[in-house]
Length: 153
Image (cartoon, rainbow, N blue to C red; front, side):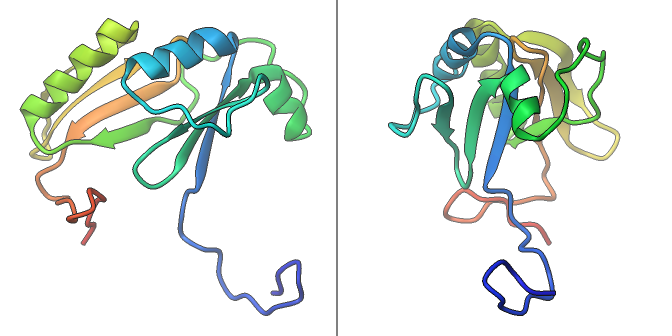
């Protein structure tokens, strides 16, 4: 396999650089994520809003325009579950509870209150104004590096 510049490539880099969420109201969603305490990037424009995260970026883009960008027709309605969740791992169960309180103050709806899990962690879910699911979790088996990134075994 070769890349666009003709260089040989044998694998796809294992990284997620950007997650872009389709939103129905760009201003409302931008205000929600800012209320979580996330830093809006100066790269934002009237068409797309960017937030910095620990090792990637979160983009907010109107749903129909995101579908068009991907070459797909606009959705005919939102499914109850999209088959995707986004997760934020935290250092302790108390940090999960505190983070969920911040999300609720920002306008999030709790989908599943945090509780001990059968795998030995602690986890709960909320949804943003467009129904995107976020899991807040403490996984004692996934420590953090000094830089705050997950240190998966």
